[in-house]
Structures are given as structure tokens and as C-alpha cells.
Length: 470
Image (tube, rainbow, N blue to C red; front, top):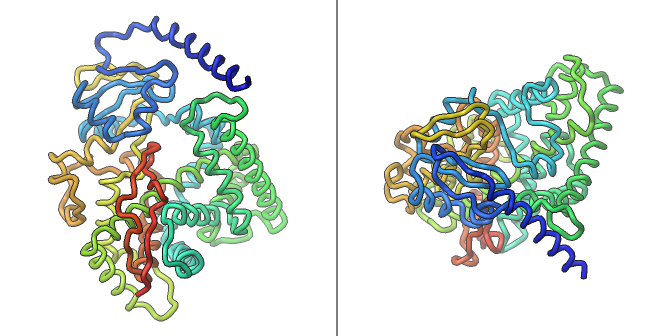
């Protein structure tokens, strides 16, 4: 009976929105496209097959820009390198945007960077993630990776890489963000966080039993834990002196933010700061763990590529004393390995792209994008275009030895709102690969394992990899 009432309620809401949507009469000057179903729009089609979604609509509507509806919003999708360039070079015409379900589930009070508290948080995040700062953390990342590989890889003949890379990435970001390293509690936090993320693109119906309802409950549990950690950190800083150390480079992100807040006289509510930290966890988890997963997938699939990566990594290992940790200078030597990472991200982007909101009417390619519309740039509009990447389905890392045409390969975005964590992701991925490749030869347990999009890429079986120690 409950399920019948629920379906009836959803159907009633659907009809109401359907009637409302029929009243909309778009201008002839809007980009061509379709809005799909009421409420849902074309979200489900986009989530299930993002690459085909973009290519199909570029052919059917426009190679420059088309409209769609995602997460209940009108979206203008900019295509190709010129579309990317338009967004990256006109930052004053856009502001950050996330779907309402994301903002609510991640407990973000606002993403308006003009708010003093958010501005201060972003400044400290940028300082934390700048290259000069991250260089000091290479040995920490290497140490944690060694421990992870020793515990979860070495004892086994086969592993599920997607699960392990996600687990490792979450542990590392908890350590660096707020010095949280109790393994059992980190695992519990990660489990709730994964439940939260699964509901971000679900239908936003907050009724018992729905995925969105489970996500909101998980969000509260994660937020409550973060608030507890924030309060303990504040108390510890007050007891030990807010500014009793000069070497702030050794501080975790939360400590930096709290010290800056005290110094600048900018107050954070505990729940506001918890939401911002939660956003950092989200941003730092799925893209880099996905990149690690599919680089290892490609290394297992292409022995000649693996052999070159192994050669490069062994040369670095041989230059070190026994037990000596990696340094920034070692990362700089991993040139071919990074080309492999880039080629993997080209073929299987860890995320589909990025979003903004137009703060003024825009004109592009003869069309008008009204103020308030959301805009989306998408990696799939260039990454497999033979015009920019000859023989695009071939895995060929050496293509990155040449100069790329501008705005064709932008896995971290570009411009003022480029992904803050691009250098963090690069170092983490390379450190992880060094520790795996120098320990094992790799092969796929199931060469036919399917790839599923959510819209982020997911291996159907978690990417089962057989390990053969050197």
C-alpha cells in the first residue's frame, strides 16, 4: 500500500510539472535542443551515457552549443575548443553553480565567493593546494601509499582497484584536511559519504526508502561527525595557542582555516565550516580515485606501455636509498607516466565536465543564452574528436609528447576557476602508480569487464586486477 501511495504522489507531481512545462514558449534565438521529461529533463540519458549524449546532440542540434535540461535546470552545453575557450576566457560573465541537490546534500550554505567566510576558506584552500605547499606533502603521500599497498595489495593475488583506490583517496584527504586517521572511524565515515554521493543525482524526493532520503540521512551523519571534529580542533588550538607555530606548511587544511579565521576576525559557524570541508571531500575523492583506477586498467591492458612506465619508475626507485621516501624532484622525473595518465583521462574522463551560471545574457555562435541559465562544458566534445586526436580510440600516450591544440584537453578546466586540486591530484596519482608498478605486474581478471557511467565511469566489478609480485 505504501508503495502505491508513493507512486501516486510521484505521478501527481509529474502531471503538475508537465502542465507547467507546457506553458513555456522559448525564444527562437535560443540554442537548439530538447528539454526532455518534466522535472527529470534529459538527466537519465546523460547520466547513463554522457559521451554518446554529447556526440548525438552535437550532430542533431549544433556543433557549437545546444540546450538541454539537467537536474531541473535549463542548460546550455558549449562544445568544442571554441566553446571551452569562451567559458574560460569570460569568467566575469559566469558564477559557480552546482545542482540544488548537490548543495543541499553537501550542506553548503552558499557557493557565493563574495561572502567573507567563503572567501577566506577559498584563500586558505588555494594556499594549501599551491604547488609550493604540496611539495612538502609528497613524503606523507608516499608513506601512506606504502602502508596502503602493504596492507591491502601485497597479501592478495587479486584486488578490486576501484574500491581500494577510493578507500585510499578518502583516507588521504581526511588526513590532510583535518588530520583524521583513525582507520575504523575513517571507514565508517567513508561508508556514509558513499551513500551520500549515490543520492546526489537521484530524483530529489525526500521520502522514506528513497535514495535521496538515504543520502540526506548520510549527509547529516557526516556533517555531525565533521562538526565534532571541528569543535575538538578549536579546543585544541585554544589550549595550545592559536599561533604557537611558524611552520604552517605542516598544518592540515582545517587548522589553517581556523588560524586564519582567528587572525582575520572572520567567524565561521560550525555547520557552515563542516559543509565546506564536506565539499572538499567530495571534490577530492571521486575524480582522482577514478583516474587511478583507469590508469591501472590501461597499464594492465597494454604491456608495452606498462613496460615503459616500469622502466621510468624503477630508475627513480634505484636512485633512492633503501626505505627513502619520494620527493618532489622524483615526481618531476615521471614524465612518461604522466603522459599515460593524461591519455587515460582523455579516453575515460574521471568526470564529465563542469558547470557555471550565466550572470548576464550571452551571445555565442548566433544564439542567446539568457541570464540565469546554467552552462556546461564537457570533455567528451573534444577528447574523442579525430580532428584534435587522430585515431581517437587508440591508447597512445606518446601523443602527449606533442603540443596539444589549445582548449582540446582540459581535464582540470582552465582559467580563474580551474580545479583547485589539479596539482594535488597529479602528485597523488603519480605516487600511487609508483608504489603499485614497482611492486607488481598487472593483468585483468576479467578482460571483458564492462564500464558503466553514473555519469562518472565505474567498472562493473570494481576493476578486478591480478597481481604478480616482481
